[in-house]
Amino acid sequence: MASLKRGRPIRQRELLVTMVLMILVQSFLGDDHMAQRIVFIALLLAVILAAIRTLSPSPRRLAVAVSVGVASATASVLVEWYPGRTLMAAVHCGFFLVFAILVWTLLQEVFSDGPVDTQRITASVTVYLSLGLVWTFPYALIELFQPGAFELPHRAVGDGVVRPGILSDFLYFSYVSLTTVGYGDIVPVSKPARTLSILEAITGQIFLATVVARLVGLQVAGPEPTSDRDVDAIEPIQ
Image 1 (cartoon, rainbow, N blue to C red):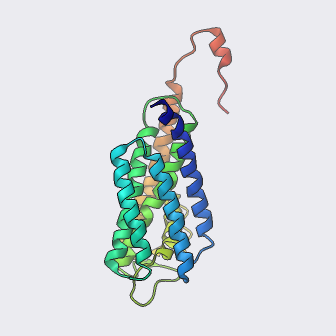
Image 2: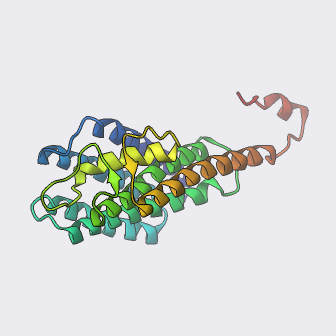
Image 3: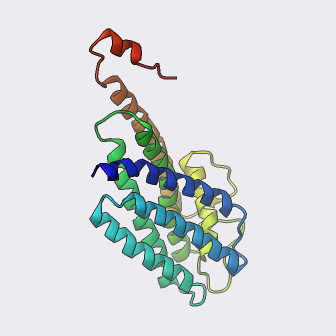
């Protein structure tokens, strides 16, 4: 059990680094070529594998994440050769479930009792980035079943299927909404799309406010020094 606790911060840092790399690399990928779309899927799969490692102390959640993640990754590759709304919708729902489980697990750690350490702060940052991924897939589902729900710089043509590569557009829009930046280059047009955008913006602000309040509360409520030596040993918070 102690080894699992020691390994958990390392797995969380791996997940955080993998997420940041995926966000950076996907900005250079387009959706016009199959090879680039498959690279994007591979990046997403790498994040899912890192998430699965983070979920390893929770056997039930791990089992669900592994089964759903593998099935979704396989389906996302198959949709390149057998495009269809049902298969693509299953991919989006599967990825959404995996990251939702990850967010729920990390939130329990962020808001649990204990000291404010590097592990808790890393988990908080990872949750914030994961929220952007979670909201990406509902946006893609809306555009999948209601083409034109978003005013996109470019959109899929032909059968109207939202292909994996175009997820990068919704990933961008998700983080823009989460941080309430709102550049206006991608615009929600339909009512469901607008409602989700509002909910994500509210979620991002509530998360930041509650996490900061929780971390400050834990720091203030920490154990008091019992001697002058303990007082001298306390390092001021920078």
